[in-house]
Every structure is written in C-alpha cells, then in structure tokens.
Length: 501
Image 1 (cartoon, helix red, strand yellow):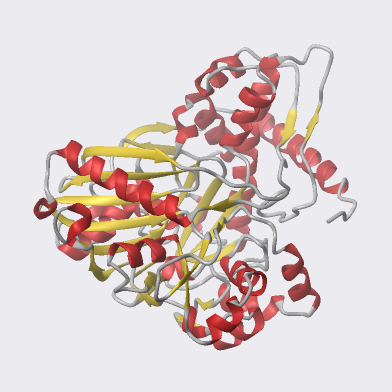
Image 2: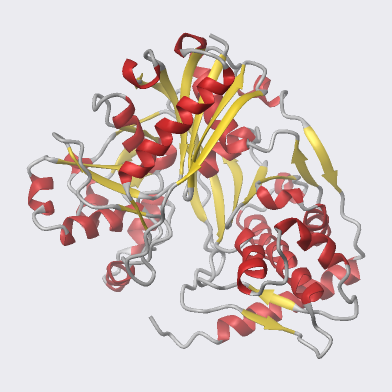
C-alpha cells in the first residue's frame, strides 16, 4: 500500500490527486461545480454537488493511476475553509445550501455582536475577528432562517460541519462526525487555547453543542470509506483546511517559516510554534496543525484579490486573452509611469479589514495603456503581500522573521515577473518549489503520516525541493519610493470609506 489519495475540495472545483510514497504524483482529476449567487454578496454551493464531484474525481484518479483500493494506504482531505453545511442527522439531507466562506449575508449579525461588546472575548478565545467570513454566524443564520431548524437543532436532529466534516460523514456512510483542529479554529466557536468547543462562544453566537463534530488531530484515524464507493474500504487519516494543508505541503514546520498561496485571493501563514501570538495588526491567529495532541499556531493574513486581479484584466477589461500574457505585457510598461491599482473589488482584507471600500487606480496619465495596467495589477499582489509581511514582522519581532524566506505556491507563482517583483519589494528571497500541488500534498502527508507511508515532519521536510529562488535585485531607493507610493494609494482608498453598509 504505497499510494495516498488526497481530496482537495475547493471553492470552484473538486480535485483528487494520487501521490506515491516518494511524493511524486501518479494521477489527478478535477471537476468544476456550479456556484449560486441568490442575492448580492451571497454565495452558495449545493452540498450534493460537492459530494458527487468529489466521488467522481476520486474514482477518476484511482482509475488513471491503475490501482485499486488495496493499493491505497489512506485518504487525506483538504477543503475550502469556513464554508458551512447543516444537515439532518437521520436522512443526511442538507437543510439549506452550503453558505460559502465568501458570503457576506451575516454582516448584520456580526455588527450586532460588535455593538454588544462581544469582540474582545471572541477574539481572545478564537484568535479571529468578528466577520461574516467565519462559520459560526453562518450556522446561526441557517438556524434562524430555515423554518423549524432551530427547534430541530435543539432536539439534536441537525449536524453542522465544514466541508471536510461533511465529506467525512458521507465517506463513512454517516458513521463519523468529526473534524480537525485547523478547521475547527475557523468557526468562531473553538477555543484555540484549550483545544475545545467553547460553551460561552456557543451561547454568544447561538449554536447548540449537539450539532458540533468531534475535534481530532490533523493526522488521526478518522474512519474508513464505505466499500461501495471505491471498490473497497480505505482508511481516512488526514484532514486540514486548505491554507494549513499548503503550509504543511511547503514543509513550514519550524517557527519563523512562512508560506504564501496565490489563488483567487492570497493567504500568508507564518508558523509561530507552540505559542499563539496575539496580533496587534489585524492578522488572525490560527491553528497551523495539531499532531499527537499538540497544537502548532500561525499568524495568518488574507488578501481577497490576487489572481482575480488578472481575471479582471482578462474578463473585465479584455486587455489579455490568457493569464500567462500578463507578465510579458507588464515587462513592456513605461518605467517613467507609477500606476498603482488598489484592487479592493470586495473591500480590503488584512491588515485593513474594511469591507466597504472599493478599488481604485492612481497615477494615470494620457500614456497609460494595457502594459501599465498589467504592471499595476501584478504589482498590487506584491504590495499587498508586503503589507502582510510587515504586519507579521511587527507582531512577532524575532530574528527568525527578519531573515525569513517566503515559500510560494498557487497559480500566480508561474509568473516569473511577479515572483521577482515580490522578492524585490520584500527585499527577501522567494522560493518556488518543484511540487506546486502543495495543498493536496499537505493533506496526503497528514494521511500518509498516520498510515506509516511518510516519515515524521523533520524527515518529510527533507523531501521539499526548490525549483527556483528569486533573489531581491532592486535598489533601496527604488523600493522605498514604490512602497511609499503604494501607502499613499491605500490611504486614498481607505479615505473614500463613507461608512455605507
């Protein structure tokens, strides 16, 4: 049994990757599924679409690899975090579509919690801020808006889970209702210091304890898939939220190691070891992973717009046909122009957390054209990463952070231009690994660790391979001038906030 099957259930597609014991990829499959937008700021998924697409890609990947269930040592699951499913304990039917992490419908609930002075206790216990992003208020919304749901939950008839938990329940034929500490830490209901669901938080947000799954290590014996799914039972022994899984896949096991994933948005995590660091700069404190009952923590910064800035150039402005054109186009830009794009299309994430502001372009001239806009779009991702980097260094001012190397993954890292500019603006090396499937690899590692396929973390870290290191190559004067221009642009956008809901 030398293979591990990783399920990577994402926001727009479900993927499955079969890894060999040497972490090389034997096969992969992917399927997109529908997105639902029933109202402005609302985003939903049909839980059945999540389930059927997941089963299909698993079967496809197993078939492509030419293996059977007896060859697979374990299944690992990684998932879009915070997305919330509530279902009937007896029938397995969801009582409402899944409310996706991007959904903003609980803004009023969050505003009331803040108004009632609840943020200090919630932040102290969870490491999070009060925001519609997280799962807790989504559960409360479902209970209050689906007729009879709150009464059914009080009677113990309903279950709550993030996507990993829902998939685990379905994979095991309804036998196991569990999650891991990384996903639990994104709910607003979990005390990251005690490692337990918290009764005070449950009461504040209005979620019955009976709905909640058991919280386990990220690498643990979660259960077995039912034999009918893949032709035989397979152990499920690893679970982590997608950003934590990427941190593991990047082998960021030592305090001070940092990774940044560039997809639709960007998520940077800094391993802070066994001590949760309280952010003074609006970063999140989260569980990076939990092994053998011991939690390792991270500071996390979320940028809402990264790859979607390139999609905007393609779909919104029509100045490129393919994302790969952006770097070469940016390379042709006029060096005498200083055009800044602040891509606050859906507000600004860390370290600003302002959902009301919107994007803006600064420094336009009569000669500004597609090349300058491409330059500004790619550079905006680098500037936003710098803001997270600076906030992390301020929150955790140790020598390790000062000399840190940034490990990167995700679609945008294919752009050499962007990665070089990132190294230049951070004034630090940026490392791109050979295996770009770091999220799936993290899930596979957690499962394979439990199953005995992969070694303990320090030995696994030896398998990490560098594809390219981008070294800073910009003068200090240029860097400082560019960063000052970005700071002015951000200030201008933040000043445009008129407090509209």
